[in-house]
Length: 113
Image (cartoon, rainbow, N blue to C red; front, side, top):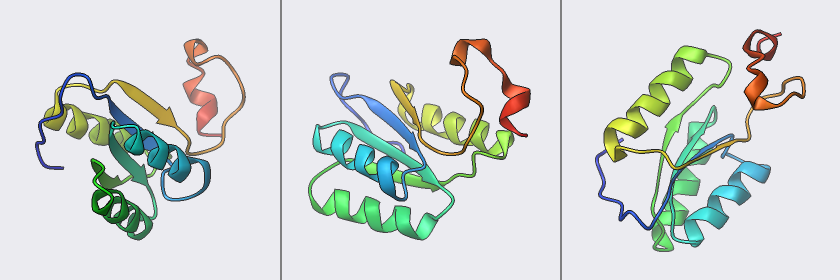
C-alpha cells in the first residue's frame, strides 16, 4: 500500500472478500459513493482487475492479498492500512464462514473451527 491523502469527509473502507459477489458489489458501491476502498481477498488477480476498473472510473481503491483464515495476515493488513491512511472508518467482513453470534461476544476460537 502506498500512502494516499484521503479527505476526512471520505471514509477509509476495508472490504474483506472483495474479489467477487457481495464483497465486489459492496466495494464498487462504496467507491462509487466517493469512499476509498481498501480491498482484500485471496484472489489477488481478481482484486487487481477490480481496482484497475475502479481507478479507471475515477474512484479511489487499492488492494492487498488477504486470507482471513490467517489471523496474523488480517492483523498485518489492517496495520498496513492504518500506516498508510492513519485511520479505518468502516470494516466490511464479507469473507469466511463462522457460527452466528454478536461480534461483541468475541467467540474467536469458534471462528477457526
